[in-house]
Image 1 (tube, rainbow, N blue to C red):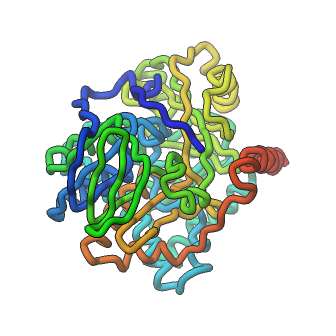
Image 2 (cartoon, helix red, strand yellow):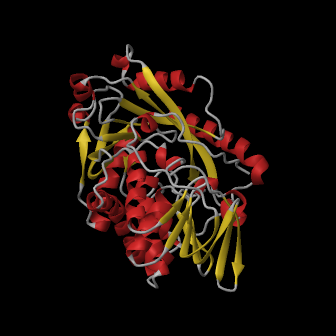
Image 3 (cartoon, one colour):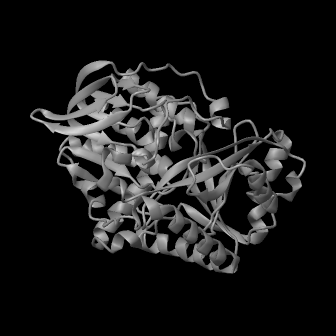
Length: 430
C-alpha cells in the first residue's frame, strides 16, 4: 500500500513559481453533501466544479494540499487524445462509439481551455505540440497517423514537419521529422490546479485539505466517507485518487500501476537563447517507448521530463542523470545548470486506456490516465457530472473497456515493471 503523508508541495519549479492560494482547513466533525469528492487533483477539482455548476452541494477531501500529487508535478503537456492508440477502444465497441471516444479526446483540450478562460486561471497556457521522430520507422508512423486521422475522423489540425523544417520548432539534430498539432499545448500544472480550486470554492465547493479518506461504507441515506477527525455523508461519491487510491477501493486499485516519472528545470536561459532553442514555444515529446518530453517555462527555463521507475522516492543523482539525457538532445546547453529536480507518480493501466466506472451505482471513479492526465482529467470531471445528473451515456462508453489487474499483486508489480522498462529500452536501442 502506498503511504501518504501530509505535507506541502514537493520542492519543484512549479511549487517555487506557484501563485498565492488560500489554505483550506481540515475536516472536523460531521458534514453532509450531495456529493463527496475524494482527491484534490485535476480529476477531483474538475468533477467538483462541474457538479457545483449543476447545482449540487459538494465536499472535496484532499489528504495533503491541492495539487500535491501528479496534478502539481507533471510535465505540463496538454495533448489531445489518450495515451493508448484509438484502436484500443475498437476492441470493445463499434466504430460509431470509437468516433465518439475520439471526439471526446479532442474535446478534452477544449474543456481545459474553456475552464482557463471562464475562470481566468493564470497558468501560462501556450498552444502547439510536436511529436518528434527519433527513427525512420517513427517518420513512417507519424505520416500514417496524420493520414489516418484525416481519413477516419476528418481531423486536419495537424501537419507533418520535414527534417529540414524542424528548426522552426527545435534546435536539435536528434530528430528526423515530427507531427505538429496546433490544438494541443502546455501549461503550468500546479497553477492550473490552484486556479480550479479557487473557482470551485467560489462556486460553493467545500474543500478540506490535510483530510485523508480512510474508509467508505454504504448507509441507508447513501454513503459515508470516514476521515481521521470527521466524516462526510453523501448520496454520491467520486473517487479521484488515481495512484493514491490504495485500500479505499482495492479492486479498482489493482487495475493501475503507480509509475514514477521525473522532471528537471534548468536555470533561466534568457529570452534570446530560449527562443533560439525552441522558436515556436511548442511542447515536444519524442516517439520512443521510454519517451522524453520537454518545453519552455514562462520565464525561459527548459523543463525536461522522462525516465520512469517503480520507486516512490526521488532517486539519488536524478538531476544529473536527467541533465545527461537533456544534453543528448541539446549539447549546446552544456554550460546550463539544473535548478530543480523532482518526481511524482502517474497511474498507468495495462492497455494505457483511461479507466472510468462505478463501484456501485452512485460511487464513481476515474483513473488510469497513463500520462495524458492534464486533458483527460478535465473530460472525466465533465462526464462524471453528466452521469450523476442522469446523463450517463458518454461516461458509460468508457465502461465498455476491459481492464485487467496488474499481475503479481503488490509484491511482484515492481520487479515486473523494471523488466518491462528494460525491454522498452532495448526496443528503443534496436
